[in-house]
Amino acid sequence: MSALQIYNSLSRTKETFTPLTEGRVGIYVCGPTVYGHAHLGHAKSYTSFDVVVRWLRHSGCRVKYVQNITDVGHLSDDADEGEDKIGRQARKEKIDPMEVAQFYTRSFYEDMDRLGVERPSIAPLATGHIPEQIALVRQLMEKGHAYEVHGNVYFSVASFPGYGKLSGRTDIEASQSGTRVDVRSEKRDPADFALWKRADEGHIMQWDSPWGRGFPGWHLECSAMSMKYLGETVDIHGGGMENKFPHHDCEIAQSEGATGKPYVRYWMHNNMVTVDGTKMGKSLGNFVTLKELFERFDPLVIRFFILQSHYRSPLDFSEAAIRASATGLEKLRETSRRLEGATAGKAVLDPEPFVRRFTEAMDDDFNTPVAIAVLFDFSKALNAALDAEGIDQPSLEASSAFLKDAAGTVLGILPGGAAAEGGAEGDASRLDGVMELLLEIRAAARKNKDFATSDLIRDRLQEAGIEIKDTREGASWSKKTS
RNA sequence: GGCGAAGUGGCCGAGUGGCUAGGCAGAGGUCUGCAAAACCUCGUACAGCGGUUCGAAUCCGCUCUUCGCCUCCA
Image 1 (cartoon, rainbow, N blue to C red):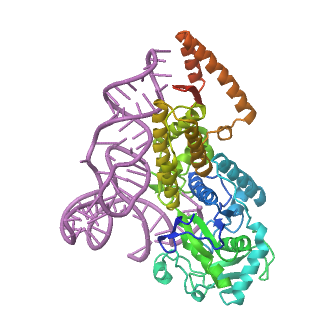
Image 2 (image 1 turned 180 degrees about the vertical axis):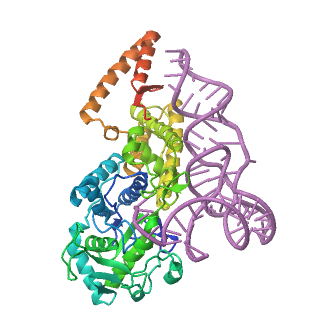
Image 3 (image 1 turned 60 degrees about the horizontal axis):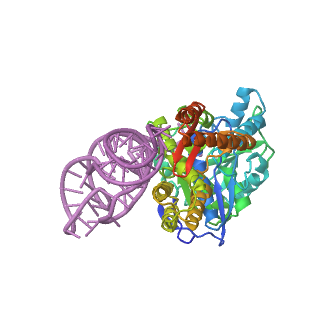
């Protein structure tokens, strides 16, 4: 535990991780804005943080994981113009904004469940925390960090010296020259950002506030909810790289401006999914939704594909790359199946060196590609031993325990269960029974050298999408993945 | 233009001063009734040019290229 290193985006170095309170970790991850189906980029982000949380828990920490749902305040355009994303979608679909939010929230969790992403401990909604957000704005006004103009409240960037420290954008004025469009004169400084926005008559979502009817700015919700559930200083705050500026810089300014305390101890940012080298994004229209992807690939193959690259590296999407991952994952699954069916032999195989390497990889800023490489090495060693004289009972148990722990509990890539393949559990166990029978019949046929029958069983199952593999331990079967 | 990241063998993708990454694809072999699987063997890759060093993919400089952020986006 003490060895865990985390790359902190704020210091731009790997740091030894020590939680504020020993044995307890608070983590906040920016959740989705629910106005459309999730795509591969969301999968990368939430799978990465899922593994972070799993590893922290595995290391013995009690983790409180907060991941918000943004259902208001996220504008489609410039902070001054633009339409609320949820509101716009509601208008398009001619339904209530809350219907939009609920529909896509459910869709999001469906997809995450299939990816094996565990649910957060708390999933707060922005609309459910309007009072908290108003209170935070008040606090900022009292401390002179915010000012009101015509029902809009802005954060004064000039009042907060450290503004931009996360993104490295310290000279805001200079960076803005040339790109700035349509500066609203009511702001004292063009870089000031909205905490609370006045709502026009036609605005669908609005609430009462000390400054009239309005709605919260996008950045505000994360500060308010993070501090409500995790305290004024949180251990880890995660999100996508593209949110460093302005979103996370704004969060820091709001939170630290209000409390005078450090907001986040470790900032973690995951990299993008690219398509042909260009970022996959909703606005670019080059995204693949997870629902589309799941029709062609086992969700756990997608998870495995994601974890084969580091969370801070960009991941290039291509069918060929995913297919290569599918084959690789199948190899690990086959090893796992083989191990479960193995009977005790003579040799000794101590998984300890692999456990150590796996742990080192994960402790090194969650290096899942290396951790997976260790699993492949282990798989090879195990298969070689089973091919030879088999391994004894303690070795079998230790190996099985390691695989279940590393590939199952920590990485979540084994087993390829019924849940991932959409079958009900009852069906799955019934299928197990049927397959067992077929394999027995086939084994008997082979014993009698009735290869016509044994091959018929194999070929017909192949057509039905089930593959049979013969090992020293007997035959095993699996559904073909893609 | 400003801030940041990166260029690794056919493809994907780790590594970061000397010690095998790994996966996929490919070639040969062992095993098997055949096939698949598994196992064994095979690739001496690090954008280019300089420099530091006994030694660099790894450090420094320059050049080229790509990508992200600077307006919404995981």
